Every structure is written in structure tokens, then in C-alpha cells.
Image 1 (cartoon, rainbow, N blue to C red):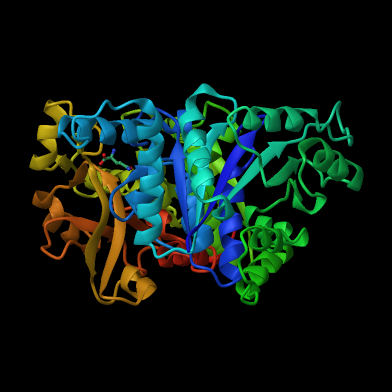
Image 2 (cartoon, rainbow, N blue to C red):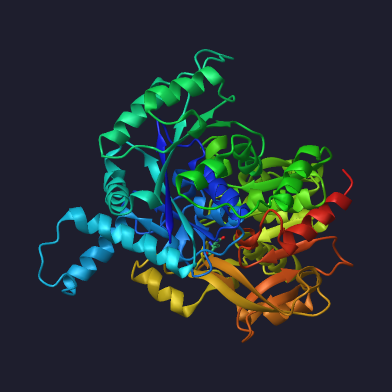
Length: 543
Ligand code: GLN
């Protein structure tokens, strides 16, 4: 019998609802249940692919090519599973499906009103996702906060489901408790009480309240929330700020969250195993020796919060690899534009490794190219992800092949040396302005060349990695680049597309670029092989 857990937010957003949902999944998994997680985003965009990362954070990509919200990355990382497009929906995608069905006479001539047909479509999708992943418990997180106009139809879906299966549906409210004044320690519960009223007004009542606050809640506040919000005290769970998100499941268990959930859903616990995870958390806490990593990017002017959200999977992948070596990651944000001034380049030597992550468009490109040249010449560990790899090819072509105007046609369509170029099948999408979901997206296989850094990192012949790009290394230049020292250590099985480039170890301690995004597949307990080797080289670099 499938059990449904819904996670909704109260008071305000951005308090870690995604991590809370993922952590609930983790603790239930540790108690022996098959779990899957779904994200619902209440906006009209059909997927997250057309959104600017500074608006909404990183666009996460699944194996099947779905471009979705960064929370899906949290679910995959916490649950160590590969999710599919069945696990993600937006208001836009739900309406699109209902409208298409109506156009195809799928409703048999009926009058298709918003209620119940939109909520029924939502419930149907949740059931399908659960069946597909053989889950016993499905956790669904609804974006935004209760009381907003946008998520009302999703709350209606919960109401309908709960009235059909009252014993199988559980509602978790993640609510923020503010304090007054600087350094204040008195947590205010009133906004939470209002959030519960807002939920009541749509015919629902929370079963569990996660009290998000800067500090743990005291007994008085726990009693108060329980009393005013009509839930048992043991169902009020303290969720204070902590230094690592990976500690959240451990923290929830201090208040016996899994016990409370299992009891409420009438599920029999099957032991408990959090050993691997607890060990990770302990080593994160113990790690003291820093590894200084610089990230050269362009999504920098919208404030730190947004910045970290724009590169979240890269950050997490660096963390996983660093924790593997029992070190502490130290991130430095470097604005690509500043490296167009050669005086600033020597700054790069202060770091043990530099990541140049993915990106689009011309801003910051020349700065990144200048930085890559410096990293190559000064033998500073470099990991280029997607755009980072493409620009490394541009740099090498300019410096080593002597093609001064070498470029990607994304930046200069008229260059004489289009070393990075668009595939013919992609050209059509651009001219027809067919942007949504049309890049090379999702998992593609790559063959690894023996005796390379990549092959010895993966220890495999055939790998699968996730993509999100339109441009590729131009095959007309592959041989020329190889003659001048570039090693293409990974390529598509038909050898048409270059997937990984590197410089041999003899020439550089670590200079690797990937056309794909390895960061999407890194997991806390299974760091990605390329990030692991990158961090290893970084640790070996003296500063
Ligand atoms: N802009 C590049 C392309 O479309 C790289 C994309 C990326 O870094 N994700 O090919």
C-alpha cells in the first residue's frame, strides 16, 4: 500500500524545504522503505530549462533529459537514486497535459473544469511516479508557501487524496520561526500559527511541523506550537540552522522524526541503518584542513545566496570529493571578467584548483579564456565543465594552433576557426526559435581511451553522463588538436562527438574538461571520479 507524504512551506520560502523533503526520504530509507521524491513547481514554465539561474538557481538535468529544479538534485544526492521526468511537474506541464488530452477527446466530451481535473492529473502523476520507481512511500514537495495563489490547486490535490485515503496521507509543514532583534533568542510562533490557519482554509491540517529557525526550539515553544496548532508535541520537530545540509537527517532523528512518521502512517519499522551517512557527517565535522578551490563564473552580481544556488551541483560535487579525502572545502568566487586584465591572473595561483563551470553567452568568456591559459601554463589543477571545456579548446587552438580568432560560434558565428560549433540538428532549433527542451539533454554514453586520466579515474570502458548544451567540439579540428597535445579521452561510441579532453599527466598535474556535466551525478557517499581526481591533484598543489 502506497503512502503519501506532502511537504509544504509556511511563513516564507527559501528555508530549506527541499533539503527537508530529501532528509525525510533519507531517514525513511534508512528504516528499510523504498522511497521516491517528487517536486511540484507552481509556475507556468513547462520545465526549468528556459529560466535564468540567477532567477531560480541552477537548472538540474536528469538522465532522461528533464530540465528541472535544483531540489531534484537534492533528492538524488540524499536518496542516491536516479529520478525521471515522472518525478517533476509544474503548473505549466500539468495544464499542458490536460489541455492536450482535451484536444484529443480524452475527456470524452465532458466539460473540463479546473477542479477536479487539474488536481486529479496531479494525483495521477504522483501515482505513476511512485509505481515507476516501486516506491512504498512517495514524498511530494510543493514549491512556494501556503496562502499563495499559485499552489492552491496542488493543495486541493492533497485534500482530494486525503479524503479518499485518510490513513495514507501525511502533511508536513516546514515553517519559519523568526527571532526579534540582533542575536535574539526568543522564537516567535505566531507566523506559524497563521500558516496553519492558511492551510486550514483549504481544508487541510498539518500532521507534523518542522520548526525552521536559527536555533533549536525550546520546550516552551514546542508546547506553544502544539497547543495553538492542534498537533501532538512529539510532532513538532526542531530544525535549526546547521553548518552542513547532510546533517539535517541526523538532526531530524534527534527528535525521532522517522518514528513519528511511521506511527502516523501505520508502518512497521524495519530496523535502522544510517551508518554510512553518520560516518559522512562525522567526517564533515572533523575535517579541518582546507582545500582552496576557486570557481570562475559569471552569475555573480545577484548576491551570495543566488550565486551558490546557481552552481549548487558543482559546489556539492566539490564537497563530496573533498570529504572523501577528509578535507574541508573552501570556496572562492572569482568573477571571470576580471581576468581580462592580465595583472589579475596571478591571483589564480593562490588556489589549489580552479573549476570553470557551464554557462551561456558572451559575458565573461574572454576572461575565462585568459584564466584557462594561465592555469595551463602555470600547471594549476583545472576542471572545465561544458562551457569550461569548450573554452579550453578555444584557448588551446588560439595559443597552440596559432588560430588567433578561434572561437565557439556561439560567440562569433563568423570566425575563420569555429573550433566549437553547433550541430546541424541544433541549427534548426535556433532558427525556428524553438528553445525549450531542445538542447542535447540528458544521459549519453561515452567510450574512454585506455591509459588516460579519465579512464584511470572511472576505471571503466563505457560511461554515461548528463548533458545540457548545443555546441560541440568541431570534428574538423580534432586531429589538429591531438597533434598538438590534446588528448580526447572520452568520445561518443560513433566517435563523432568529443566528450572529455585532457592534457597528459606528464605535461600538467590535472587539466581536464568535459562536454557533459559530471556534477549532476556526484553523490555524498560516491564522489564523482573526475571531481575526486581533481581534488586529489588540488591537495597535492602547494600554495
Ligand atoms: N553554451 C554552451 C553550449 O550551449 C555550453 C553550455 C553549458 O555550459 N551548459 O554548448
